[in-house]
Image (tube, rainbow, N blue to C red):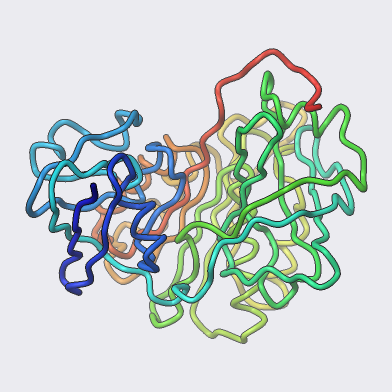
Length: 343
């Protein structure tokens, strides 16, 4: 048994097998609708059910409120059709020809760039390259059947190696393994690329990037892509961290500013006494609002913890940002488990 789904306003149609989600079936049919986490945490896949009924798998309450459900909203990564549907959502056409693939990779290098951040570079088989859009992510397929998602930090023109930024999550099975036991030349399996967090090149609006923690990774890829293609749009990077030691790769944004005119504003929410910090403090998205009380003429690309992304979206829209000009990738983490070796 399957259900027919019609996407509005395009009129595109696809079938959803019983028990599958709208998002999975749309991607299988070649229709790239927006998504981010694929587990009901970020809200990037949110759309409207115009006709028909859906049931949701488990999701996080902040991603879909009761009020939104009453208005007909749904998270398509979790929504399972209970009848034929008509839905309303944007369709991503730029990356529609890029298909996700499963492939092996080798850990080429593990570089500690902060007390709790490792830059991991991956090498694909010699006859393979991954076609992706700057800002997308990959998922590691672990031997216990679980998956771990990490954003690509390099730009597509520089695809000989794949670059990831991994933050140590206390109690996190995979990151504790990476930080304590993983060796270079380890073989892993990944699937990618995934996600709809990438630069909308058809626009000429100035861009505000908001990066929290390792949310810097996909934004780094997007900025390097823009610079490689000599894009002339005004770009400003706001980067939030707890303390000075958490601003890993600190010289790179400074280089972008010196050589390419990209404004760079680091913001510390909890600077340490030894930081002797004279820069901006507080929540990173508040710094954006202080500098840009009217966001109506901008695009925003925001990546980091779900709470930061959610607050930025709410407050930026209130400051005039058109909702369709807010692009986000919310980093969610698996529940902590007792540390063990991934055998």
